[in-house]
Length: 269
Image 1 (tube, rainbow, N blue to C red):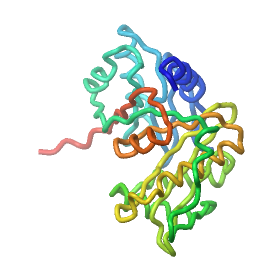
Image 2: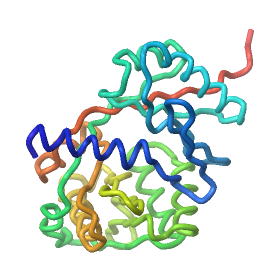
Image 3: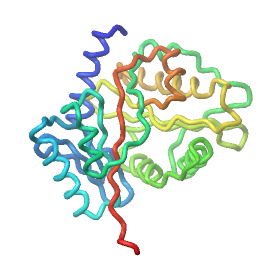
């Protein structure tokens, strides 16, 4: 895609996926308050700001309002998902001044499903794919996440179980197995009425990297998206994933940074 096309696709992504966001689970609530679209959810779900349309005069007040809202709900933390083209230009600095901590930046990427669905999907030798439909499959994914990313992800586990139970048509998850051992996993999230399916959680345990499994999981999900008539795949790519995705034909729409607010702990001497 050339720059003009990428900018048009990004504008469509902002409108459909961010500004007109839909809840990512049955218990989640998405609402627009002032110049902010946020999601709140009880339990272990994802809480955060998905979109904002602010300026120099309104930004600080809206940041304070969201901190107050999530704090009053008792949330231990929440995320403000900042995109580099969001206004005002110094929104990141304002978030840091309000106590948010930035996580590593991610590259917002997009690919055409019609092209990606043509990628070969023959698994590497010794690898089979298992479609995730139940708790046992989710637990296999969590084993991969722990090995690939070095962290436990109870929120993701809860969100996956919720969607498989309540909205199975909005998610497609898969695990790559080497015999009885899960070695890679990924999911695709879809929402009715949007032109985008999001690719999330793609990771491979270190000893199985470099064998084409990540590429296989992208191709597998692209074919599912093609069957559903979805024209674009979107990824918030890590530095490890970006070069692979670029080789597969994904274009760069910008950079996004998760800003995390964490409830202050009790004072200590």
